Structures are given as C-alpha cells and as structure tokens.
Image (cartoon, rainbow, N blue to C red):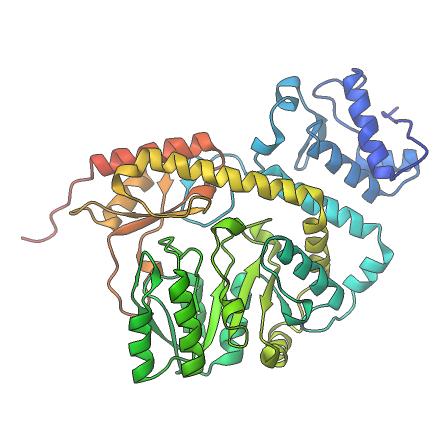
Length: 465
C-alpha cells in the first residue's frame, strides 16, 4: 500500500520540514479533510528519520491547526470549519459527561498544554545527552542547569529568584509538605488564615501539627490577631497566600506584609509563602521573600500555568535551609525525576508557553467577568485574573443544600468545610473554580444554574418535630 510521502526541504530541522509539507499538501488538496495521516513509524521508515521526529512534526502540525490527533485512532486532516477556528479556543478535555465540575482549581483547558509536552518529549527523545541525564541519579535539589532554567522562567514571570536558592519539587503541594517535614516536629504549632488552602491543612495533619486559625478580612490575615497569638506562644511557621487567599481571594495589604515580616523576625518563626495560584505581575504585591528573605520560603509550581499533571515546582529557600530541605527530598524520594524536569524546562522555554499564558490570563479575566454578570448581585469575591470565586450565600440558605441541588442539575461546587482551619465554624459560602468548565459556553450554563438555584432555593426538609 502506497502511503503519502512528502518531499522535504534540504535544510532546517526535519520535524519542521515535515510539518510544513503537511500544511502545503492540505492547502493544495493533496491531503483532503478527514484524511488519515500515515502511521508515524511507516512515515519515519519512508523518510529515513526517527519516529520521534515524525511525532514532533505531527504535534507541530496540530499546534498550527492543520490536523487533529485522536487517541487510539491516529492523526487526521481537519475540516475547514475546524481549521478556521481559533486554536486558542480548542479544548483537550475529555468528552462532556453532562457534569460541569467547578470544584477543583484547574487552569482553563487548552490543547496547547498537551502539545507543549509532546514537543518537549519528542525533543528529548532525539537528544542523547538529555536522555543520559534522565536515567542517572541527580542531586536531591535538582541539577544546577535545571535550577538555572527554572529560575530564569520565574524571573521572566516577575518572580526573580537565584538558582542557588531553589529546590526542585514535585509540585506546590510537595513543596508545602517538604517545608513542614523539614522545619517542624510533631505537636508544634503553625498558623494560617482561618480559611485557607486544604492542601496545607492535610499536610499539617499528616505531620501531626496543631494548626491555628488567624482571622482574615479583605486586607488578608489580621496582623494584630497574629501578634496576640505570638505574645502567648509564637507558632513555628505561618502559611500565607498573600496575592489571593484560597478560597476567598483576599489580598494581603502592603502594610500587613511589612508587619508580617517584622513579626517573623521578632518572634523567629518561618513564613511559607504560597504563590502557586498564578496572577499577572501587575496584580501581585511585594513578595514576602523580598521583605524577609532570611525567614521566608516561597512555593511555586507549573500546575496553574502549564498543566497540573506535570507535577514540577520550585521552592525558594533561605541559604540556611538549603541543606535541610535537600535532606527532606532525599528522605522522601531521593530526587525529583529529571526526565519530567527537563520536559518542563523545554516547555517553559518554548514560545508557545508565552502564548498559552497570555491566552490564559485573558481567558480567566473573561470568565471572571462572565461570573460577575450572573452573580454580581451576591457580591462574590475573587481576583480579576484569578481562577476562583468565593460566594457568600444569602441569609437562610445553607451551603449543603445548595451543593446538593446543583449536583442534581449537573453542576459541582465546593463547600466551605475543607477550607476551615482548626475548629473554626464554617461560613455559609461556596467556592467556584471557573477554569473547570471546558468552555465559556459550559461555564455560562453552569452559572445560570447557580443563579436560578440561588433565586429559588430548595425547600428545607423537616427532620425533627
């Protein structure tokens, strides 16, 4: 059987030449819509290149919008109506099962997230030196070259760090857990906002720590309340998400940031600053690791920027803690897999990563505007370019009842209980993660359901006489 075999340009990367040949053949009608491209191994044999080269070429053609890969089936030429659609509105999500899940804080879906990884892995497959590094044991804090590349990326994002201060982690949650394991002992006290990230609560429980709730308002953690707590017995560590509290979106004011840095020095506690929930630089305040560098650890991750499944992050640590944190990595997993770190480094160095992030920032802003059009009368809180929205319920409506009613309508939100620190009573509120919807249309329908349910709440069943 004769397969389609292009003639390639003599110069330039082979994968790019194949991708360009695919585009030319589609434009000339040689590859009509719906035509299946040759299996990668067959085309590789015909052209005398590696399978990785063809894989990378197909990924490049898909990124440009010429073809579409179908898992388990192959790669097909897209129809005109598909090709003309904006690639930045394409979704790599699974088939809609009828449920719009807004319970998990995920970035908006986009086909480029998978394409970036595919291109990175294809490039690694053709790089002998990278492959040899990937199968060898590495330093527990990560290769110096990887730390340099991640530090350069963070600096471009407006979070300047030095490579020497970084410990590579398996995501932001791993950075939190490492910090608690390295700096605390069972039974010690840590402090956090009264409503905070559930991952911190879970990690503290695993480490057998006592978590103290500090009140917060629109300006973030109440520093006077923290000062009173310190006067009684200073915590070992204070965890804070200064640029957008999860779940409420509260922002720690500049004067409170300076006060927190001063309290940390006065009472000698550590600050764990969580910057995983990404925001544009213009919406971020002064980093705590700049105000109190010797007492602050800063956790960052690719999860909310590239893809949650990559599980690669970076923890900025003071010089005095570099050895303890490295020892903690060694004790847990010896090292972060260098193959995934290399893949992430290649992803963030791609021009497509910048395009993806620019799209994501605008997409999240549009989703926030859409949510406020539907729910503005209930005064929800959240950042203009953030992913989460916190909705305090009208008086008389309980979160559990709203969640159950929305679940029946195919919409899933998160109630307040997972965010409550210690024995703090749960407010009647819900969190909506706007990136969880596969499209703006799906989000619009979900928000409509939320508003209708708020306007006509379910009846309260009688359980007692």
